[in-house]
Length: 228
Figure 1 (cartoon, one colour):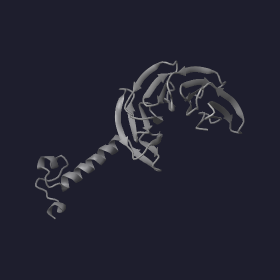
Figure 2 (cartoon, rainbow, N blue to C red; figure 1 turned 60 degrees about the vertical axis):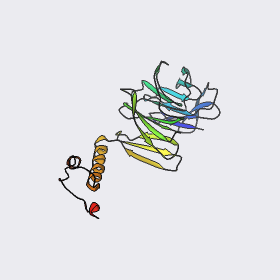
Figure 3 (cartoon, rainbow, N blue to C red; figure 1 turned 135 degrees about the vertical axis):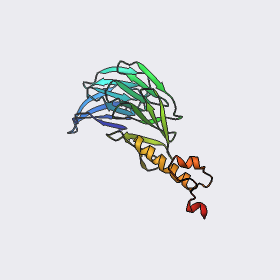
Figure 4 (cartoon, rainbow, N blue to C red; figure 1 turned 45 degrees about the vertical axis):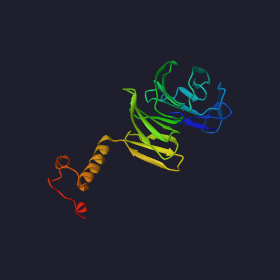
């Protein structure tokens, strides 16, 4: 079993396996359905937010209903897949990030990773997608402008990414045996940048008075570090 997902109502579990099948189970461990149609191992499974559709990723991405009927086949090799919060868009990752609708139409392909995308997560408001890759980065994409916002460098392959419920924090799981939390709140990032700049200008003897004035540092100030 390579991938597991709960239905939104918590009553059904979907599992994707090396045996090329997806199985649906109830919480008593009874098999409800076998979704058979992939020609390679199933790397990712996920439910739509309304629980009526299952997306499965293999050498293609397939959409199914809960009765095991195949609804669509998307010609995209999906090592990772995720539904948008409104359920209208599917994000799929290989070496690129593909955005498709439920009718099987490709909406956009976003490029930027140099290796396979292992994990995809939508922000709770659906405006941002995070992707974690074998290229040791996490990239954040703005879906309204359909462009890259920023790239977070890691020290090893990134296997998993997830947003907090309020969308202000992202958790990153990596092959370096760590989980790192990044604060995405703009106010926090601005404050951290100000603190860094204030410290730099305070302790840099070559900083000009005009530069120091941006952070409220008095004209002619000489830090104790500079004097020593």
